[in-house]
Structures are given as structure tokens and as C-alpha cells.
Image 1 (tube, one colour):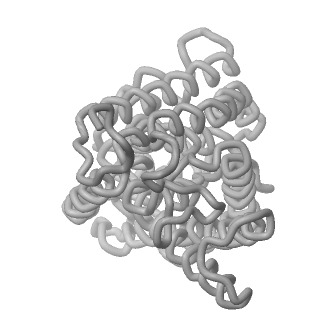
Image 2 (cartoon, helix red, strand yellow):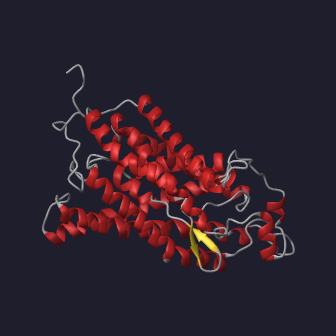
Image 3 (cartoon, rainbow, N blue to C red):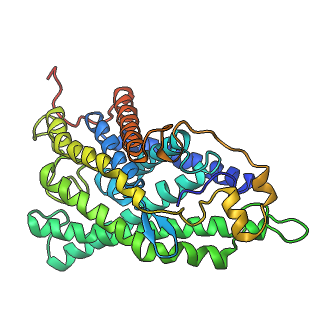
Length: 364
């Protein structure tokens, strides 16, 4: 789902970039207001799950590959606006450092995976949870294993809808290119596949294999987090976390809870980073992510806009590092990406000023 460089026209990239600026501004404001400073580093841990999920390529018969995003997971833990910032930073690291997704196409990739996905996923999650609560005759945010099971079912449904909504947006962005930008002979200047090709090509994989992978990642990680670190994330829906977690002032001091929440979850992040070479098992490129040469062999010509397009030379292209074995390059890339995310949100934690007293202060 990472749109490469030059598949979208500069005009399309510019329009989407302008549209995303107010989204990022609002998302940053929400994150600053909603996330306690002590828990800001945990947002980086949640973003790391997205980064790692996108490294596990899953094949589909016919030679194409895809991946999960785990965007709904971050939205459930920290809210959809904070998820927008977290996933946007993860996508920026992927584009700049690893060449996964285009630099000019970064706003479009953020629109799809950092905005549409968590917003749609969280909306569906909230709707399902409230229906579950009404059906059970309970208030939102029940406790116990039954409530956790309901939350995980809601998360599974929401994550499936979220990733397919993002895939549809990506397909539409690619599919309108040959309709809007073509030469006098009718040949596309950028992505050459029209809507009636791009939409089914994108959606078949996401409605089946990759949508299922999104559910597995979301439900598996969320279930682990809720059981071993119930204070990881924010309290939602009126002050009580959906799995019984709480950010009440009367609870343990926030720094203590944050440290305890981070330990086992960081262990899972480390395990996933070590396991990322499993993504190398899938051969071939994702649909719509071919090189210009490979695309030319598929359609019989090189779109002139792509031939004259701009290219970014990333430091570790395709998660590789020089002559090192592919599996080692993958692990080092995972470590580098996760480390940058943790550092970024640690810095944001130091720069943020909480607007609400989320716990006792040292001078109280």
C-alpha cells in the first residue's frame, strides 16, 4: 500500500499534501491535549508495532505481496488523532531511510494509512463496543475476561474495515492518474492502471489475505498488551479503559505505571524485530509498487512522467545494508526504525507541556 515515487502526478501529491497539513495540525493538538507527558514514549512503542507490521510481507498467489499496518491498534490504545501522528512518523522514516514509499507520495501514504485507516477503524470499533455494551445491558468499559473478549472482537472487525478503507483510497488515487494525466496518444504519464484495474487489484488481496493479517496483528498484540500491561495506552470512554485500565489520579503515579507498562510490551517489540526476516519469504513486489523498468515490461511502455520523475536515494533501500545478508539487513533495519520512533516520541515527551494534571507531582 506504499505508493512509490512518481506513480502519482506532482499535482496529485501537492493537493493531498495541502489537505494533510490541517489534519496533522489538528492531530498534533489532540495528541498534546490527550496524551499525558509520561505516556508519550509509549506512543512510540505503539508506532513501532505499525513499523514492524509493515515489514512482514505476505504473499498472494500470482506473485504479489502485501502487509498489515496495525493502524487501528494504535487508535484503540491512544486515540485516532494520536495514531495519525504516530503512523505518519513511521511512514516518514520508512520513506526517507528505507525507500519504502515515495517522498513526494508521503502525504498520500499518510492520508491512506495514517488518517483514513485509524479514523475508520476507530469509528467502527467505537460503534461495535457501544452495541456490545447495550446488548449486554452494561455500561461502556466493563471489566473481566468477557469484556476483553468483546473488545478483541470489536478490534478485529474494526481493523478489517480500516485497512480495506485505506486500500480503497490508495486504489482510487492510483486509478485516477491515467484518466487525468495522459499524452496525446492516450498513454498514461504516471500510474497507467485505470480505476477498473486498480480497485479490484488492490481490494482482492486486502479483502482476503492482508485484511486477515491486519486482524491477526491487531487482535494478537492488543490481547497481549491488555493482559500483561493494562495501563499501556489511555483510558477511553469516560475515564475507564475498555479492558479495565485506568488513568485516574488516585491510581499509582503515572511514571511508575508507564515503566511497568513498557517492559513486557517492549519485549514483544524486540521479538517482532528479530522475526522480521520472515517477511523475506514472500517474493515479488506489492501491486503498484514495481520499479519503472518492471512496470514498462508489464504495460509495454514507460510513462513519460515517471521517466522524468524525481528519485530519492535512501540509506538502506528495501531494508538492506550493503553486502550484509538480507536477513541481517532486515533485522538491523527493524532495530533502526524502532529506535528512531522511540527517540522521536521521547523527545516529544520532553517538549510537551501537559494541560491536565494526570497524577500527583513531586512537589505535592
